[in-house]
Image (tube, rainbow, N blue to C red; front, top):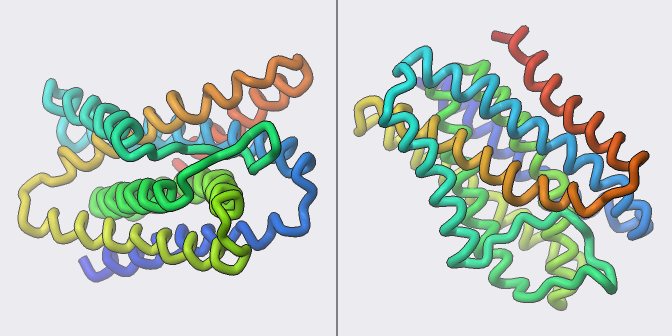
Length: 249
């Protein structure tokens, strides 16, 4: 159990450090960043789907079987993600600020991002409880997703009136809520028998919702054939990376 705690905390710290990726975007031209970032969104979409269907769900089926309860827990992950997005305006935006892509409510975005990071922590903790390789795979999938997510959040804060230094600092502190998620996940498993029977399907449902509802619609905004083909390649590469991690297991 000590190993699980160690891996889980290290993983969420790595995810939190990704929030500092905004620093790297300061010297990048907005048009170039927007052009490159959409392919990273494609890649992270494939990685999230890949982790859900290649790692998390097979682990659930192997340990608990594919029961009616498991199906309900997957749906719970989707429904809760939908409710969060509706109620607190949690928006997974991955396109930097431009004159044609303006965001409001910077503080609401911080609150929504805190909830999002909390859920990431719950998911990472649950994954490590199942197995170390699953935890590593899930952490990698979360990191791939967090890079474009944090760049988008950084842009929202700048547009909301934050200085660059404050935007980076706030993003980092909000990212640390993932640690709380991990702690809650690991403590829950200590007091609730078979907690992973709920947490893992819930995690899969959350990933499926994020990839299918938030990311794919952004990808469909690009209709040019050449760019669309590159998106498809990046999408498949994301899945292949998750598939290649099976070697670790």
